[in-house]
Length: 421
Ligand SMILES: *Cc1c(COP(=O)(O)O)cnc(C)c1O
Image (cartoon, rainbow, N blue to C red):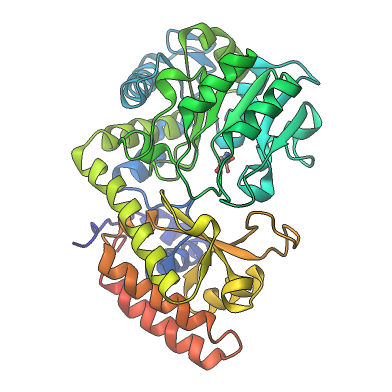
């Protein structure tokens, strides 16, 4: 099985702005010639690209469908309503706000709708899988609110619901946030719901990474029983680079007001159109197959790396990503592992591993995932090959000639899975 062959239309750019054209062409080649393992990335369809490049860009539509501050919105209303209706159906949501510009602004709006300055909320530590916008001290979420962070169990390197419950009882937070950016295991959302009910906290999840798995039943979907769920639309959901908020009817007014006029101005209707396409695609049976394959591929890649002597955080994966402890595995810092793989045409990001003793900018591991390779049509047998490329490269961090040989093998391998031509 190989991926589709999409043609990008860049004729005007090519003619008018050759410098820019060349940069985009080189980036396309880089995306096609390399093994992309960054778990927050994906490759979108031609229909999504076309929506984002459409004349919907030209329109000001402040407000919501039927209640705009500008004239001439009869067709953008159709566009936004398509996105809203599909989002509600896809996620089983009572309400969807499709205007957030990305994942972090969606979180900002959710906090703005639910908390006052200085209120306490619980979120996961950045170094154990949380996102910057989950209360990190350098981020608005840590500066404007009193954030108390929970972590993982030291033995299992997985969530410890009893510890989170204890912390919640002790801190009485206004809101408890689950959903992560670097956690390779399933999340028991029902347990979070129980904890929130026990302490009277708003129950919120940020499913930016796993949204595509949630809508296909590959991971439990928290939307039907959580108060508020935020997500990006460009990760496993495979849509435009953007965000979204799903919530219960009772939060609808507060969420909508927080997004506009609370935080944002005019919505990006061309990107909202891309979301409408993405949600339609995600309802197709082929997308459910895709989501299942992502996880099968992650497990196959984990098996290959474990067989090659690697140490994985929590010992493996239930979802689309793995955290490799490169210090323990190959005596390589995460940064060095990232640059080594980069030279071999294999892309990942350095990442902290649970209870990392090194710093976030110089951590002990890397984070890798399978959403992009799965979009390109790769399956378990290809993951074995990808694993071998990774192991081979990590064994030769100082051998540029060897890494460059691997790079050309990687390029040849990737040519078998074309996507954009
Ligand atoms: C990626 C991510 C975000 C941020 O999304 P941006 O679109 O980059 O702002 C927020 N939360 C989680 C859990 C993420 O993984």
